[in-house]
Length: 341
Image (cartoon, rainbow, N blue to C red; front, side, top):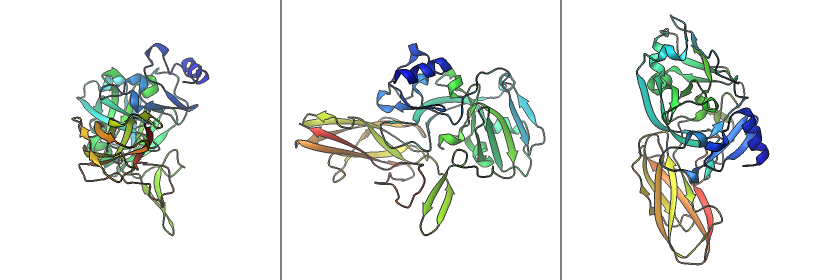
């Protein structure tokens, strides 16, 4: 990590030097944006210290008197302190969290975590939404806000208080953040302080708040982003690596917001032929670790390619739709060019 960036983060209290594990890729300091090096993964889950960060504004300074208000189209407006919700049954889920703008590559705005907290349905029912309720406006203490359909929140939304069995840290949204497993991270508002139950979503306010998938086929078409798209990446070898001819082991990760990964295929000849990779035992919404042994017989440039298919038969595309105008939901083939000697 660049020393100037490191000292800036250290001064802000967002990094503790003795617990840093992986090489961090700092994209921005203000607001803080840090990628995770997927090749540094040990085990299934990204460590809390290495979990990616994507802020939109400056993080709140502290946790003093943090509460959560629920208001709007409800019969009983509520204001909770963390201790007030301890009576609820805890929910736990393992899930990938991916930024909607995450690129294709072996470092990125993505991590896999074991999340724990309370069902948003249980929390919302304490306020008794009215018949007019159709959307939630989620407002964070940093000024960031998002709209999500009430139906999504009731189905699987979580008010997270722990990550990887540890209390949520400030840089990851303490004392609580929203999580919608299988959906892009833009909806998982950190430092949540208000939930406004409403009949309509928030009005469009630009890319920071209401990211959309945009295509142009004669006229502009804007659609809400889908679930996290099926995707695989190669983490070893890295771009530009020098490989010995013979048997080479290729390793990577694959995930999908629609469910578990069904298969991963790997090519060592730029996609002309494919070999099925071996997957570890994954669960829905988490990533799987995969590996494949490839025979490199000729010296020279080798283009490795990976593609995945999920249990819903969604297949990773070879390239991005050229009609797309937005920069979100990037999931085309990951290609890594190496040299065999």
